[in-house]
Length: 300
Image (cartoon, rainbow, N blue to C red):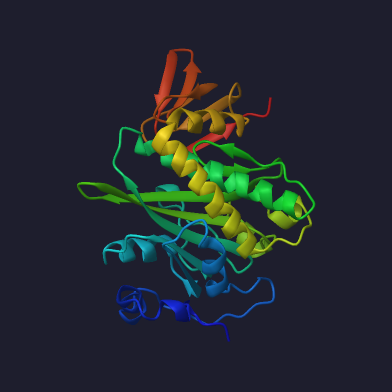
C-alpha cells in the first residue's frame, strides 16, 4: 500500500515526524480506483528544479488539509509544503461553508512564506486563483484538449456548467513574514447525486468539461509552476495580478447582486481596486467591497 501521511524521504525530519505522531492528522483507509496514486517521492523530485525546499505529504482522509497545515506552521516549518488528501470530512470554504470533498477530486493545501513588503497581502487570494486557473488550462493543453474556465471574484473557478473549483486562503504572521496556507478543492470526477443535494448552486468537474486523462499529480506540478510565477508578480509587479485576474474573469461589466454581512445590493462590476477589492457601480455610486457572503452574476 502507498505510504500514508509521509513519504519515506521525510522520515528524518523531526518536525514532520511530530506532525504525524502527535495526531495532528487522523487517517481512515479508503482505497479507490478513481484517483491516480500520489507518489510523494516522485513529486518532490519533479518539483525540485522549481522549489529546492519543498515537501509533499499525502493522506487518505483528513478533516481539513488547511487546518492540518496551519498546525504545521506552528511547529516553525519554513519551506513550501503541499498536503494532498484523497478526501476531507470537514472541507471548508469561505465564511466557514462546507466544501463537498468526496473521493474523486484534488484536495490540497499549500503552505509558503512571503517576506513582508508594500505589496497588498489581499492580492494573494487573487494570485492563487490565477495560478490554479492557468494550471488547469496548461494541463488540458498538455493532454491534447482545452477547458474554458474563468474566475469569479475573488478566486472561484467556474465554467458555463457551474463551479469547478474553490480556494480558501488563510494567513498567520510574525515580524518579518506572512505564512500563507491556501486550500484548493478541484472537482475532477463528477459529484454523486448525494453530494450534489448538499450544494445549492450548480457544480461541474474536469471530466465533464473535457474527457481527458486528468491526474492529480499533473495538476499539482502545473499549479506549483504557476504559483511561483504569481508569487514573483506579487513581489515585484503587483499590478500585473490585477491585470491577469481581469483578463481571466468574465465578471467585469456584468450585473451583480451582492450580499455582504451588512447589506444586499445590485450593480455593475466595474473592475478591481489596487488591493484586489471589487468595484461595483450602483444607483448610489461606486461601492468597493473586500469580501462578500454571496455574489450572483446575472446572465443577461
